[in-house]
Image (cartoon, rainbow, N blue to C red; front, side, top):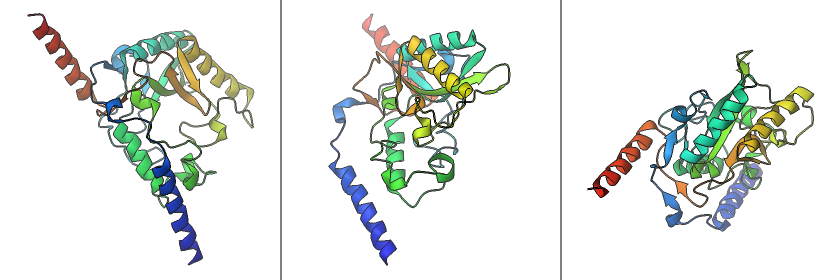
Length: 255
């Protein structure tokens, strides 16, 4: 009985906390217009893509809403900047490996629903072994809105072309914990620290800014849509459809 009461109180506190949170955006900040987005594979063809939220190997354990193809999308500006990063790291024997880029708002909503279900801990051992799921919101691991939905943020690592393996960063993508902080030292080796630094320096050098809590997360410093959260699905069709629509509008306007 006591355990049930504590569980009910935890759920109630979580729901109240969510309801008390001020809305970060309003309806005017949401957009379904994909006309300024591109397929990352077309702009950065050398980057490897392993879109984790299209798969079931992620902290939720299911394919995430809005990921209907295993493709990465970004705003045109962000993709062009990332191409410069790709060219730079390739000169040093690496390729970029992309885990996530544009993230539809419905995917973020999916994360929120998962976080509210405190009984679903299928992936705890892999992604948050030291964290209590009831604290994911207050610690900032889950939020109602994400910079990824603005189209100029990317999660990535380095792939070593000489070994054919991912570079050892001393931690895995989407691990919830201090070990993911870029400045974490702890039990990391000198090589792991240098690998993190190389990725960070390469991204900053080409116009991206890092996140203090995730070594893999970077946002274009001068992102074109800093106040817009996009809602279209992450797939080829979304980009192609709006691209043709935009051309049609220009064509009609020229007559």
